[in-house]
Image (cartoon, rainbow, N blue to C red; front, top):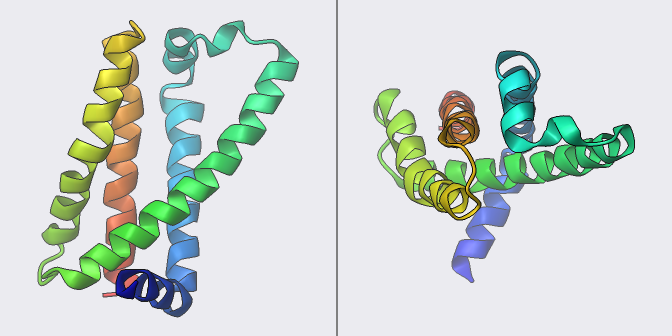
Length: 145
């Protein structure tokens, strides 16, 4: 119960930093999937075969899920960083990478393998998460710690 209270205290005392993290998460997503890898990702994921109505629903669901995901990740990442030694700007990047590997990259790899999806799709999606975690960890380091 104490951990939930600590998370609640972290949220209430760092609202602006957390909102900035969500914004950064969404901005990287827009850049990543909108400009850098839009064509490749659409083709590899099958999104290029959706109807306009399906694309609209998918976009609304995806943006809502991204806002929630960005917020939850930033809360957990920020609270974890509070508990750990962050005496160097490199440490947030290390912590973000340590979180990314077992909780994002490996489960994504497993899903990619089971769904018979191309490896390039895994690199695009997992790469987005790694870059986003790095960016959010630096925002938290600069604003909270």
